[in-house]
Length: 333
Image 1 (spheres, rainbow, N blue to C red):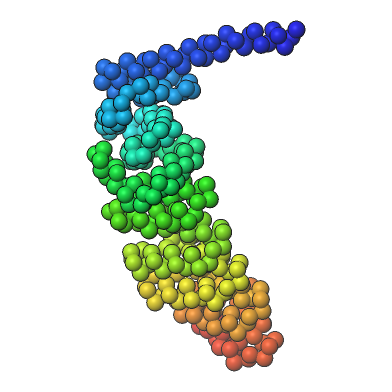
Image 2: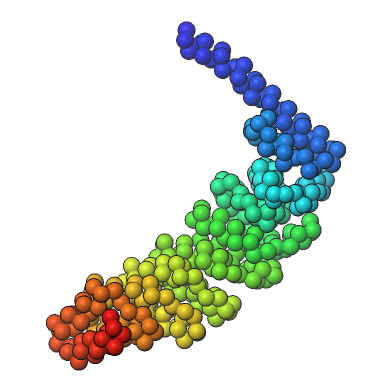
């Protein structure tokens, strides 16, 4: 009996909920038909506009595709002068969600994404899955990365690095690392030169998977081809992943490569390699590595210094141990 009463009491709430959603959609539709797009952010931000299920832009499906694209473009353009720029955040989110779940989401969704990011807003987390699904579906039809991106020009937009970086991030979020790498490689052909975020996102994810060869390839490419210097945290993650795979010589080669290319290698990167040497009792290698560190003005932590000198002494490498002691004394450490 109690369950029946509860069921009956929920019905009016559900009807009111559905009625409110329909009213919201009708309100947005009337504003769109009157081309009063500037009112949309305030409508969706009001308490009455808090219910966005179903999507308030669902009515756009009744229009032909060309008309729908034109309307969305006009909405996006109307939001550009709005201040603060974050005011249309809910409108951007609803438009992007509706478009990504439509039958032909790209390239319109990329245009909405671009305007969202340029406004300083971030799409809701669910966007990563929806965007990745739409992207992979289009790629599955034998479209190249550059051709998909350049389709934005057909509707009056140009692909940019921010949009591409979000695609890369979304693909990494759903474990599509290979496709994320394909997007990175195809960006330049669409006129988008990769930046630190492009490579940083991919290298960070490759580091989590400990894909040593791919990490090194990406680091080399960003430095040699585009003249970019990896961020400190990205480089530390990369070297830690190589270390975890017990490929310490490759980590040392990465550091030497970066030094030769004039890229600043921070203390933390050296410490990653030095710790591995000490953990594995590679005291001679540790000693030589510490020597290189001091030449660049880096002084290891006191415990590391003690371990290196003591380790060298224990294996009879007195000459190197004494040289390091003198070097530390000169540096007043």
